[in-house]
Amino acid sequence: MHRMTAPSLRQSQILRGALDLCLLAVIAHGPTYGYEMTKRLAERGLTTVAEGSIYPALGRLQRDGLVETFRQASDGGPPRKYYRLSPAGAVALVEWRAEWEGTRSAIDRVLADIPQTPEVNIEVTREA
Amino acid sequence: MHRMTAPSLRQSQILRGALDLCLLAVIAHGPTYGYEMTKRLAERGLTTVAEGSIYPALGRLQRDGLVETFRQASDGGPPRKYYRLSPAGAVALVEWRAEWEGTRSAIDRVLADIPQTPEVNIEVTREA
DNA sequence: CGAATGAACCTTGCAATGCAAGGTAGTCCT
DNA sequence: AGGACTACCTTGCATTGCAAGGTTCATTCG
Image 1: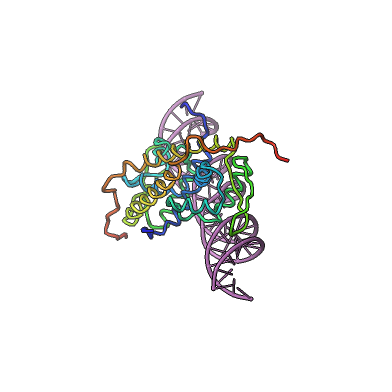
Image 2: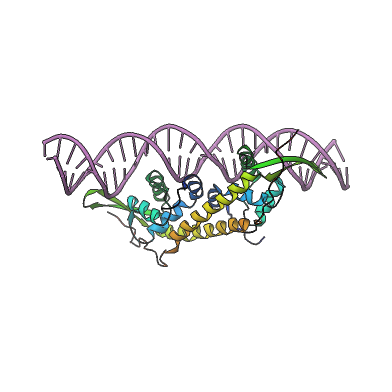
């Protein structure tokens, strides 16, 4: 718990298109339930991922046949809804991961050659 | 030109939140105009970035005072609208880049420990 | 001259989706 | 009874990438 930098705005935007990938990745470890996923993600630094994002996303994964679910009682709380990877989900995981890496590299490539001294408009803030 | 996998869907989603960063990065090299930026980005692999995305984005950057613009005639076409980094833009570029790197690392961290043999639901597709 | 080409700009409408906020249960402890 | 924590889910909002279409300017070709 060191960094206090509000990770908010930008992170949420980037997450778009990577969130479901991350969820699949977490689920790939074995059956997991939503509430726990938020914690797993937060541990790795995806602190803004809230339940309001995750449950709809899980619903989509299920709708698309990438995960399957089953309920199971828990001690000390309501029953949990576990998600587990389907064969199609395993395929998607591989594909999406490749796509993520492709896009990530492209972006890094664009960022790579930023000059240390960017061409800033120095100018004496005066105009007509 | 080997892969025919439409880069589309996922890339566009990830781009959300990184596009303006990329634009700032391109502009950091010196005054550039929109039409050229699409080409620069495409060269680096951001092939889905179309004008429909870029002009609104540039408008936002301008509205927020991160870039300044000026027009200049071109030979063989309508006048170009050049964008150039403002001091605030230079600051934003540094900040956003750090945020991108943070989120990127977090996502990679989540992806890092995917087991080679993910726990797939093997099961004989049969259920009461 | 008129049409086509290509550079270069911009707008509208659509659809996706992350999040804040709020709500419902279930169990346990005081 | 009340609080706290687990665990689920929904609604409404705002953002934003993109496809599609349209405009302007200059050159080239018939």
